[in-house]
Image 1: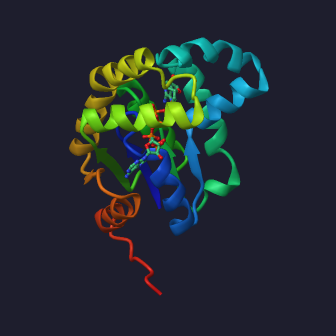
Image 2 (image 1 turned 90 degrees about the vertical axis):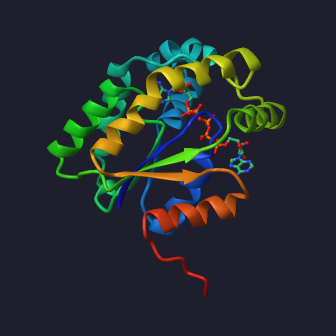
Length: 192
Ligand code: AP5
């Protein structure tokens, strides 16, 4: 199965992708994690991305597409993947569609996690205290939320028009949200 997880910063994309990965036995591809690995490694790409990410701005579409092409060329995606953090604007959505058509792996579902802004801010403040992620400070969080509303939210309509959008209520316990996602994509839940 090939699916994209959409949602604002703090909506639970990474949390749910970790669970979906186990359940569906497909790799979790997080562009945020790929970029943070480059930053941690001190690579040229990481050095370019570090300050951009800390501010909460988007890293350039060209860098992201190159990274994604590289990741999707690996054999482990043959059975599918969960994409988290991409696409983040309409240009990326278009590029992803073309890339998937080229490799013959069309998207099955785009799952949108819906969470109120107040709750997003609370969750990210909690993570800032617990983990100290560089872009979880109040100023960067505000910027990330604005960019999501301006640039990423239109991607939701893009997938709605393509008939693959599944909107899921992203509040409640992590287990509750996970169950809702499985129901939305019609994958059986193993209760045994
Ligand atoms: P990225 O890493 O993708 O960050 P993000 O989209 O801002 O998302 P987050 O990781 O903050 O939130 P999430 O939705 O994954 O929620 P999570 O599960 O972690 O991107 C970071 C940066 O990289 C970008 O700002 C940009 O600079 C760059 N970048 C990445 N992709 C790019 C692209 N395509 N183009 C350009 N630039 C790109 O949960 C958040 C918190 O909430 C956690 O503490 C979690 O424990 C908690 N939580 C989760 N679910 C629940 C629940 N149900 N109840 C209570 N708490 C919960």
